[in-house]
Length: 252
Length: 293
Image (tube, rainbow over all chains, first blue to last red):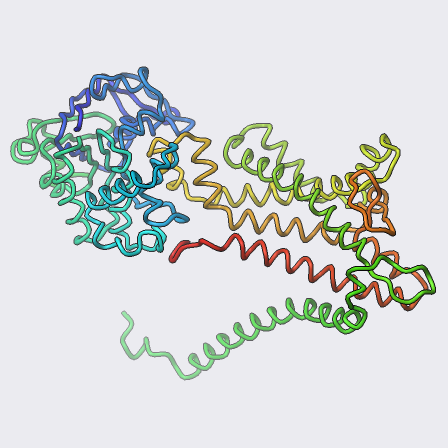
């Protein structure tokens, strides 16, 4: 089951660049939460702080606290453990090119030492089914490289790979921005099914997408969270002038 | 605005494009031939002069005394295998580990700049100097020429090539692949070995094979380390023969029979290098999947 995320006074820097300023918000469990805003507004940095990927950049710094399911991810557990429990899907599909489809999905478990074949077989089938890719690849599981799939399939493969380690939260950083409309629709359908089991945070440039898949939406601008509310409220009756300007296309 | 008539090329323009297009093709093909020609010429010459002296005895017998016909280079073939074994056992792991340090852990540190600089200088050191170094470090204290000293001299020569190619190949692995591994909750060291290094492996292996082929033909560093040995030996603390050494001695000798054997030895050396490189390529390319980049 998914868990909620409590973010309190989160600040992040890249070098001298203060990319996130005092972000405080509550992301509820088993819902999809969309983050929108113009390029460079900090929304990607924000999700990268939620699974401590931000700190893999040597010049990055972060303060404040993030509690996932009541646990402070910056002090209670290690970064590796955090990332195992909070999966991430990146903007560009990034399957491991030297691995087969099967090995890609199994990689998270295998690289953490799981060897039991029967369990792996089961997890691979379940994850691929969940990611709506099983029927398309079940005959080539061990024959084809993950990199041989189409862009949309690769992205669903990456989702399956993230699901295989059974995370509680799934972060998606513009998961459909490199995909065609058909693949995008598939990913969106997927989000609907996945939020039954996982808490989903999705960064998107596509406001229709946010409106379609998310219960809640946050609007970021210049490193600040301007408004965070139900998606319906944000898109029909935003309380902040800047949010209204953005969603009506007057800037950004 | 250009009209359609203006956009249509004139006959002269078309002819000029045809000419430059074909000129470029001819230059490219010509250069390719120029690159391949010396290799083919050398190989043909070796086969022509060396193949006739190749027989079963060449591979099984040790050199015959001067004046006697026959004899072979079994000692040198075994010796080269031993020397290259020692060199690879030393040069490949150290080189790869140094390359990993340069690309993954030491990025931007002073130590990595120093290591990179040292590797580049080491790459340019004349091979005979490697021999002197190994002589001073191993042969002189032990008071004996040895296979070990020769292997170490060759191994040190392999390190810079292996290290620098490993570094470059690792840096070519896209950042997104590393992020994917880290994002799955894989510890850094594990992602390094199982993902980054594995993705870069074909290039790393090419680097190792280049280094291997280069030292396989070295004579100078072996002159006063491995020294040479008229008998088949695998003892690491004894002098040992090597194909390049034997070729060197035979080619400078005044005897026609030895000249012929030197040609045959050169042919065997080249074929052995080609076969071992091909073998490594074959073994490591098995299991590559459809559509893997």
